Image 1 (spheres, rainbow, N blue to C red):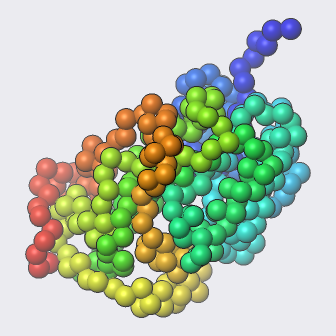
Image 2 (image 1 turned 180 degrees about the vertical axis):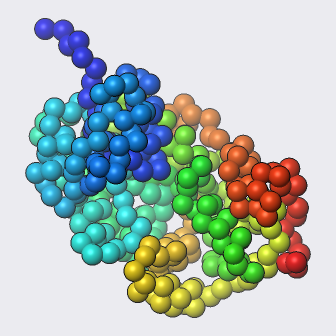
Image 3 (image 1 turned 60 degrees about the vertical axis):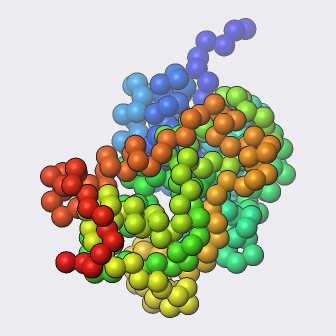
Length: 331
């Protein structure tokens, strides 16, 4: 019997920064989509990304295997975007990055899903020996491939876009701080546009790249941490001292902030990762495991950052075309 209904895709973490871009692409392609999140009552906006009944938020918790199985039941494609940047309460790195990712992979295999795509992070192999975040992300990749050998693993560098976590945070700090701390200023990064990451995830789900491989995604620009902060100052029209800050002092400050009952600005793990180059490896370039494998021309920061970083300038949109050189003494 010929199949008449569209394929079903379950996207874990589909209401987040990357997920919302991906769900919109999937909806335009005509898929039925389950957005698996811990609080579906807070993810109702994802319904607007498709037609009536096309996108449905469902409850799933990576610490609860039965909820994972319910979310995946009947799915043709499974995509896992879930990750945490810091531990709090029952949300632990091992639980989410390793055990939860493995549970998704096992459930996808059990229902006979034709594709599984897992979002990881660039640099986790280099950083696995220095911080728990990277160690568990790397272990999660291995657990996924062990349970579902044909899975596609995607490691992006820092992701930029309208609601990103890095440039928006740096813009906020440039607005409120008289100086900008520079930790591991010479470390290199290769920021990648969220739209390019979403497109890669879509193509991986549709089988347009070789499965059972790890792909590394970076944009066209490689810049040091210090250069990225200088870029933030240019885009926001701010003049701030860039003050070198030893990692030890930064981690002490992060530990103090970590005891407060709200999301930390930075954690000790994230500070350690700043010391690790976050660029596409030579091996990935040689093996054609970068954006080129997806037929995607990478989008540069110059084309995107000006569309939203003006929000952090002194006069908002009126400063959009008046971004002075940030080098100099702050006013």
